[in-house]
Picture (cartoon, rainbow, N blue to C red):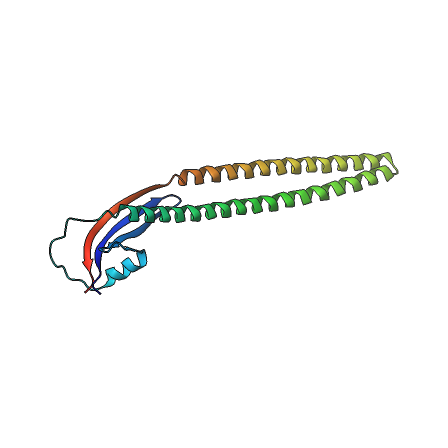
Length: 189
């Protein structure tokens, strides 16, 4: 009771990954105490009466506002960094799963090649040996296709990672705008 001061409301719009808006209060008592956001919100919920024209000796609330802007932007940057880390982690897990699956298939094909070679060496007739060599060639072709597929998938994953980085880089070029709503002198009676 008996406290008075100045309160300013501004809207901060931050454009990065998403567009976010924040209401920022900057307030100071006539005694020089800075009020935090929560206290300002509570003051604004109190019933009020307009007592007359606004005094023109408004204190400089810019340092308080600028601190809040900096904190909000820092918060947005931290959230965007977490988002980026999560997206890269998802991409890496997907790449690892894909790579492991293809490598497993390659190991199975290599195992099949060894068995086919052994069967070709043990074949009794020339016809059986020729059939085994044809089969061996088919399996080796399959292995070569799988290897190319593995390399192509790795290239595709690298392209996706680069695209993600470029996209986030564009989005992280933050822009912010501040629009002032009002400045009032208040007194709690």
